[in-house]
Picture 1: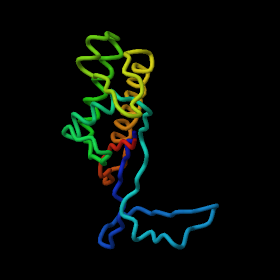
Picture 2 (picture 1 turned 30 degrees about the vertical axis):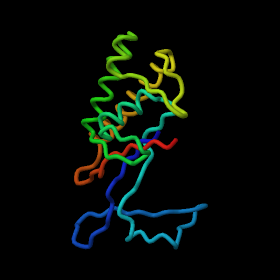
Picture 3 (picture 1 turned 90 degrees about the vertical axis):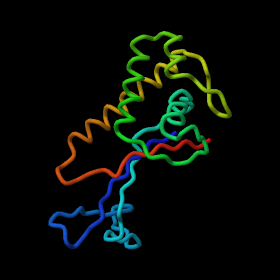
Length: 155
């Protein structure tokens, strides 16, 4: 389960300010990658393993119920909603509340469906991931923006 951030870095001649992108391998600039052709940088900003309740939330809230290992755009507001829900689940640590608001989901390679320490640990990890992204968004330089966040699960 992966959350990626795609940042637009295309260099345009008419812009006063441009990004500079250099790709190196073993300390040497790669000649096969042309900086002027790079349009996006993709970073892996979140990773979960068998956090089926987090995956289930993405399927329902982002992917319109379609779970086909597809990459799906996620707004920062949706990520904040997930973070806030995880905070509530961790604060309450109530199985009924958790099962109604952030339910587990069974399936191939989905892991445990128990509301145990692993369930709550995945929620805590999710809070940390999203809080970090919010902070990055708040501190990015003026004139720079990310193209967005994308969720994808691969089973």
